[in-house]
Length: 163
Image (cartoon, rainbow, N blue to C red; front, top):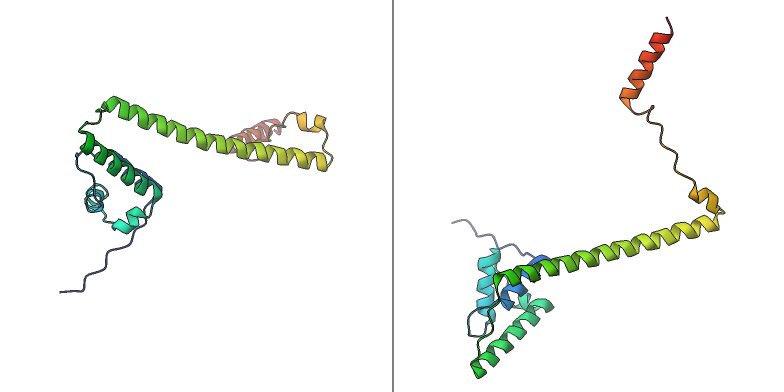
């Protein structure tokens, strides 16, 4: 029998970390989750098995685990069941979270553009570019040199004029 290759080590991506944290938050059994159960759940969901230590080393996963254990234990003490969330609410919350993340990314990009604009303006002032020069409209590029259709039409015009 040939020697078995060791399993390849794979690092968790941010997306996988968030997915695992969501799995823990959506834990449905009344008993508190254990790390062994979470490791098997993650292996079933993501088709790769990470160790408890790897999962626990990520703050989002660890926080979700601790919160879920605390809520499960308090539910066992009081006997109250958590209110069931409607699937529509879950979808809307996910959409809201996605839009918030997109908004943050776009605001960061806008901030970068603002900094770039300030850099351009500072350099324009430093090198003596006047406001009138900055406000001049852009000159349209000459497409005759690069556009093959325009080149051909000019050649045809020149041939027509020369005879």
